[in-house]
Amino acid sequence: MRVPLRITLLLFLALLGGCTRGPQESALAADVQARLDAVFGGPLVEVATLRRQGSAPYRAAPDGSRQIIVYYNASLRFVSEYDPSDWESLSPALVADALGATDQGLFGLGPGRHEPGAGFRSHGSLVYRQTGEGWVPSDDRLPVAEAGAVAAPGAARGADELVQRLSQLVMQSSASRGADREIITEEMDRALRNITLRLQREHEGVALASGPEGGEYWRFLTSVTRRLPESAGVQVVATEGSVENAFLVESQRARIGVIQSDVAAAAVTGQGVFAVSGPMSHLRAVASLFPEPVHIVVRTDSDIQRVTDLAGRRVALGSPRSGSRHTALRLLAHAGIDPAGLERVDYGSPADALARLAAGEIDAVIEVASAPWAQLQAAQRTAPLRLLALEAGEAVQIGTDLHGMLSLAIPARTYAGQPAAVQTVAVTALLVAHSDVADATVEAVLEYFYAAVADRGGVLAARLSKERALTGITIPMHDGARRWLERPTEAAARSGNP
Image 1 (cartoon, rainbow, N blue to C red):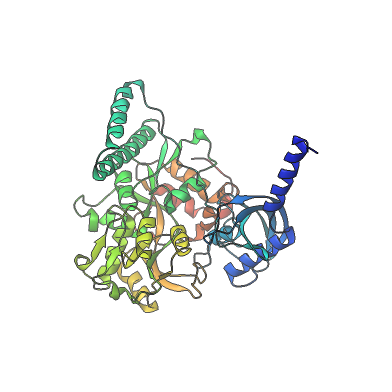
Image 2: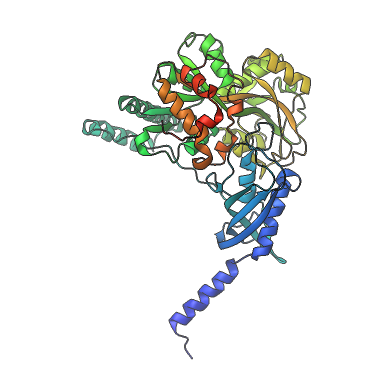
C-alpha cells in the first residue's frame, strides 16, 4: 500500500525532530547550572526557571560525532553578592559564555553590586554531543556574530570613475603576487578609514576611533552604541589600535577614541613611538573604561617561567601601531631585555599569533586585552596554552616605575586550566577626546555610557564603573568629563544621546 506523500513528509519531520531534540528540559537546566558553578567555583548564580526553545543541527565534533545546539530562555538569581564592575572580580563575559549568550543576550546584569536574590534573564544556548549513552554537553561553542561598525555614507557621483579604476586594480591583483595583494588590501583599508573619518567630521558626527574590527575596543564600542538612534551621528571606526587612535584624535580626524593609558601618557609627553612627532597637546582624558591586563602566553610545555626567560626567544609583540607592542616593549625593557635581541615576529592578527604559538613556530605572545581575552579562549580549546605570571613584588614595582600601568591579578578560572589567580600588570582602556570637543558632547557621551548603559548596553558594558573612572588617568582631563564625573551618581540617572 502506498503511503500518501503528506503523511510521509510528516513522519520524516517527526523523525528529524526526534533526532535533533537532545536533552530534556530538566537535564538542560542542570547542565546550565553546572557550567555556572564551574565559572565561579561554587554556587553564586542559580537557575530559577528555564524553558527550552528548540534545537537545531550543529557541526560535527572533532571525533566526528553528531552535535546539536539547544536554545533556551532562563531566569536566574544570585545567591551571593556579585559586582560585574569590580575590576578584581570575574568578568560578566564569563557568565555570558557559560550561558551560551551573546553580548546582548543577558538582561538585568548591569553595572554595580547585585545582592543575593537579585535576578536577571538570559537567552542562551548549549551545544550537545551524541554518545552511546545519550546527549552530553560539548566543549564546543557557538560562534558569536558581532554587529559591524556603521557603514560609511555613500560616495558622490564624482567618485564613480575612481571606484571603477579601483575595481579593475583589485580584479587584476587576483593573479598578482601575494605581496601585491597585501599592499592593495592594506591601502584600501587605510583609505576606507580615512574616508569614513572625513565624512563624519564634515557632517558634524562623532567618530569613535576603536581598534581592529572584532578586537576588544571595537566590540565594546559597538556594544554600548548599538542602540543609539541614527540621528545621534555616532559611528564606530575600526583602526589599527591605540597608537593610531592617538594620532587620529590629536589631528581631529576622530573626535573621540579609546587609547591604552600608558600609550596616552607617552603621547602627551612625546616619548617612545611619539618621540618624532613630539608631545600631543590636545589629548584629554574622558574616563577609564575597564582594565586591560598584559597577557603573556606560552605553551603549557614551555620552559619559559619568568619574563627574563623571553630573552632571545621568538616573541609576537603586537602590530606596529598597536598599544600592545608599545606596552610589551616597555615591559621587556623593565625586565632588562634588549628588544633588539628578540626574534620579533610580525603577524596578521592576535589570533594568527596564537595559532603560530600553538604550532610551535614562536615561543610567546604578548597582548594587552581585557580578560577574558576571547581569542585566547578560542585558542585554548584546540591547543594547550598557559599564562606566564609575574611575581607580586615585581608587578607592584612595574606599576610604580612605568607610568600608566598598575598591578592586577587575572582572577582564577578566567581561562581553562587556570585554577589560581595569575599576577600581572595592566593598563586601562582610556576614553579620550580632543580638547576642542564641546563639553556638552563629552558629557552626553558619558551620560549614555554610564547612566543609560544598564538598560541599553550589553554584557561588555556591565564592566563600567563610575567609581573607577579616574583610575589610571595619565593625561589632563577634559573639562566636560571632570564636571560630569564630579556630579553625584543620582544626578546622572537620566539617559541621553551624544
